[in-house]
Image (cartoon, rainbow, N blue to C red; front, side, top):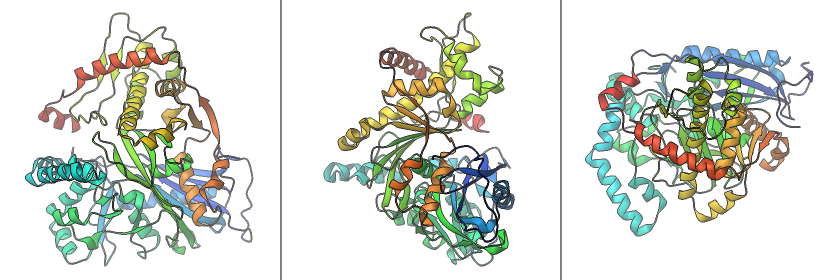
Length: 544
């Protein structure tokens, strides 16, 4: 049996009953969710809390660590209670989190120095621009490009196009060290700890016994080198960041200590820590090299399993890690689009529809090719164009344009962006990886994946079979899989494949593909009208 909605099965919560249930917590940008699974990965109980984002100034986006901690404990306890269980029935706990959100705290007292600085925060924008334009970075790119021509080494290729971004941890952490004298001084004295969300939560759960992160979360900081699989000593020294503040690197699966009995009454083993996108690929059972997963949430993420090799890109497709277990470290090539679910929510806000569930039907009501185009660039356009100055909007409106035309254009734009990223990935892929992925299906997850029109369009554009799972909470499922492996419930990845359940398969309509590809060319022509729109001053104003 595969993952599903809440199971009708009544668990036995008696104290003498064997602990055989898995608690899996998924911490995203907007929600904090905990699921209780049995060994057939049926959901017995779940709970959810909203993540509060703070905006102390226009460019800052933070989270209060104490509020997050209170909600973290509450959502776990509520999920266990909703499952009709007691904490002693929980065999293991797994944690999946957003990447690139971090905090620093005092090694001696555990006291935090500031709020969580999230991946959406742009306070270090001036540092990003300054470093990208400085002589040091120009020299690094030039030397790397020369070395790549000589050595054909992918690490050198990555270095030849290296640029920093606000979404990465490096410049935001440098901002903290430059602007907070107390943190800078204590860091030099060895009294500061740095961590992404997973690191801090594990530190709290174990009452300070564990200061560690897993490879997948480390790979999202841009202070870690996926080619050598360790913290990047060169950049740590360049940015004057003491190595002592950084956490230990651990396998995603294994012994992460135990939750202190003071929180749940009993010591609950922590057996998995992983990034949300790594957990999503794992939950999709994307274990083979060449497997492709598309997560359609607030943003869109396209991840390809590149096996035991890091991917080097010149198109803004980044080498990150999926997970590390006893079978090895899995590398991913990742492309992202910041505006996906945000587009669907925006359409609702401006009154195009009352509920997102009607958008597929509205889009299908438009007969013939749509001549209205939409550009989903509220936050610029990411890979493969990588234009932060791009803007969003409609093109091709006429007196005959209806709400259905506009909704269809919005959904089509999301499919075109996925195909853009997918095509760029294929162009940069090694021949053997390309050959491997040809016969493998696309696997999707996330709330936006419930839109049938969008799923069918992606299948037809890519020419690939597309599988939508029964449960869209695939990050939580993947984290549960990993935690279960860490607790010995499953011995190998292969044992998990029969547990994955597909709700629907979308097959490409190849007779319509030429028409769609022709329409996409027109959309790309429209896209050019929206690139480089914002000036530097208008871009800063838009972000605020």
